[in-house]
Length: 184
Image 1 (cartoon, rainbow, N blue to C red):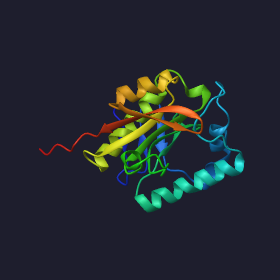
Image 2 (tube, rainbow, N blue to C red):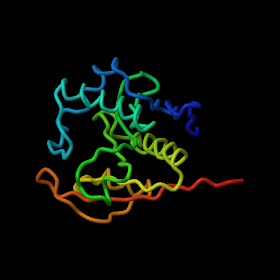
Image 3 (tube, rainbow, N blue to C red):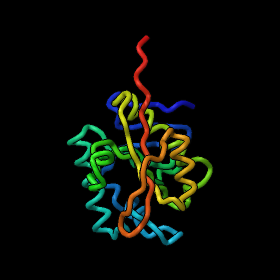
Image 4 (cartoon, helix red, strand yellow):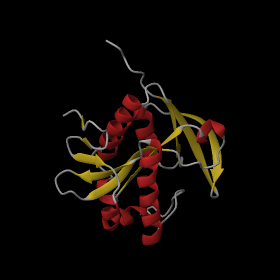
């Protein structure tokens, strides 16, 4: 099943997932995404409930300011929040070659890290981004030991362009040029 988009671009429905905007009422399902991952290593912030609330509100505001933001990912069958994927401007201070582009990001709950959930979610998010910003450059950063994210980035068309130190970790930066709109 191809992803279905609503007219305002706020919701995407795929075969197994619903990608939608962040809402204040989502805090209880959202906060568990930001605890220390099972592998015990993360270059993103580990957040308590207060920090997760601040991030959730930041992304609500991001959608207001930029007209788009990452999506909350829900399991279509249960409605459970199982991830967050999409593109944003995080202003990480990594240089103009990174900070001026939309940054792709994905995080999945442990129970959703299998069976192609990340690929399904990010493929839909990337298609929505490309439709809204045809031919735009986007970036992402990945811990080089995260082979699952490296494979996903490659599937999405990201290629490595430089390394960086962030929060005491060596990370690789990637870039992608989105699909240009084809006029018929």
